[in-house]
Length: 117
Image 1 (cartoon, rainbow, N blue to C red):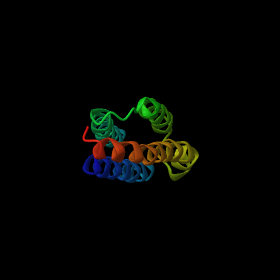
Image 2: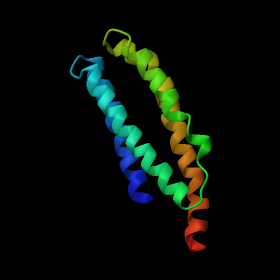
Image 3: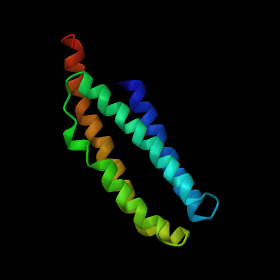
């Protein structure tokens, strides 16, 4: 699980970096979409890892869809730092909720590992 969480965090950072590049017309919407797909793959890997250890993650399942909705609204704007700034709080909120959710699951995962699941 630690490796999959690390990969997910890297994908989150990449998504944020790509959005910043998009805002200055140095990355296309397709590049943002690709970064989101990497995030989604990382998210799925983390969910599968936790679920495989018996840790419920249903409370996290809606975060990628909510993030995607915000990204779609953002990318519907003309690229600019102001457009990104308008949606950045919502984007960060979704990523923050995900990180907090993962942090909360660490204890349950450690107990499952200690129990030999």
